[in-house]
Image (cartoon, rainbow, N blue to C red; front, side, top):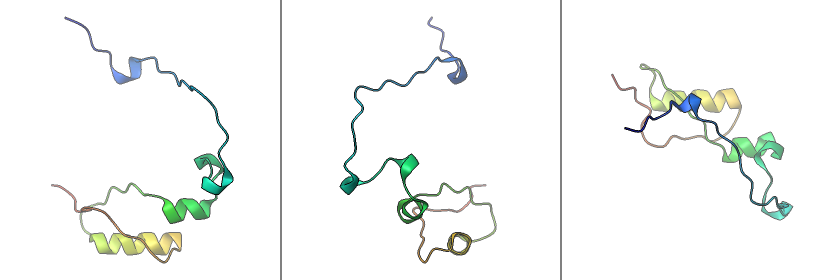
Length: 80
């Protein structure tokens, strides 16, 4: 029977087939993107604790980040 390695035992490497320049009209690389664009188009992966409602947590995110709009997809309700 073939032995399956643990994820941390696998030797991984990044292979790049071709490196191309991005036309600035179509965006920028994430590492060069202004924080304003990250906030406008970004996603926050949030592990909501039991207690506060999804609406309440969304309001906290808006206030903390100082942004006018935020929403959530799916449910943020904790599973017991």
